[in-house]
Length: 148
Image 1 (tube, rainbow, N blue to C red):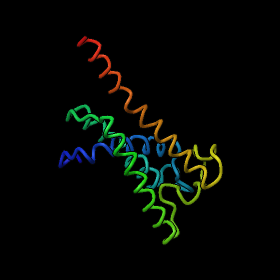
Image 2: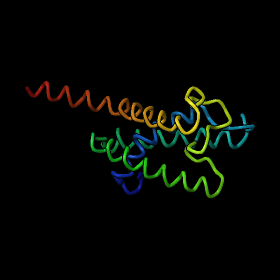
Image 3: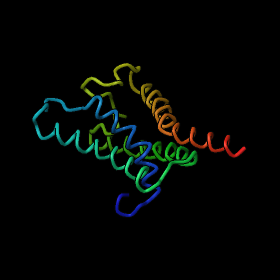
Image 4: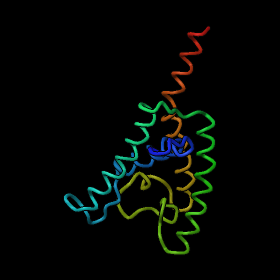
């Protein structure tokens, strides 16, 4: 995205990158690896850079999400999640936490058991995307009000 200035990648990076990376920064799944282990730094730097890249593309390159972006991301994340669920079954992994809740403390601990927490994750993800879109919605509403 940073090299090619690809808008489709930006849409996913903005909504899913910021939303997911923020969760990863607030409740990291580090297991036994705390400061100053390499995995600690790798987790915080990589997730922090995802957020930074989305903000850079928004502020410096002038990209911005739209309502259609939100719909596209919502559709494709579900397709992606179904593929990842299949991969998790094949290799015994837990990418996207769709196979089970993580062993470390996270917001998922507040949700019901599998598979019901996946529906809650969907709802929380949608709310997070709406919150991330809110500054642009407010800007659009103000521009329409001024135009009248």
